Length: 216
Image 1 (cartoon, rainbow, N blue to C red):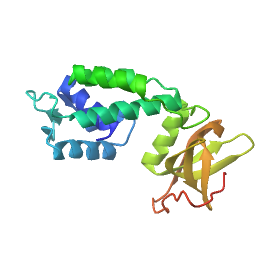
Image 2: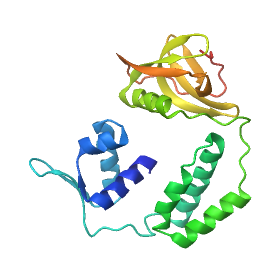
Image 3: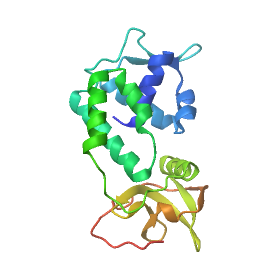
Image 4: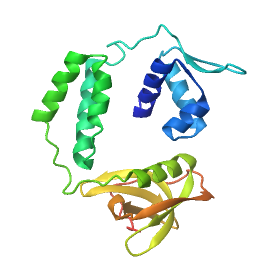
């Protein structure tokens, strides 16, 4: 389950009713993406249902509550260690907010694992923190979701590319992309960016760590 899908579920548990459009605006993704998220949650047994017309929307059974069986002990371990790694390599502070939500399900286990992760799990993967600029990341994510070319302004030039995926390497985070060839552009080298109206179809070759790519 993706982090956004968990956030959607928590939002529904608090509000009981919403719409695809409202969720799309809150989470900054397309309505089609929200529809896929709702379908996934429904497929794993969450009692979500949709009604058309006046008074319709997306609903969750009012009697439904999260229990510890929703996340297994292994799930909680994996989530906390993944959050620890992410915060360490980016300098972000996302873990605490999510831990508060996990504590609603399994407070004792969550607190124990978080303490172990902090004391016994040290991340030394890259030499410099990955700079995740909120505006840049939002624009890149938007273009990934909408399948739009993106204009990247680098230190000495700008390039218009089709973003394919993020790539984490030992020396930082890159965007794997394509214009007339496949490229890897380091996120920290992007000064600013903006979306274009140029659409693309996702038929690209998957990233191959053994292949050498132009840096842009």
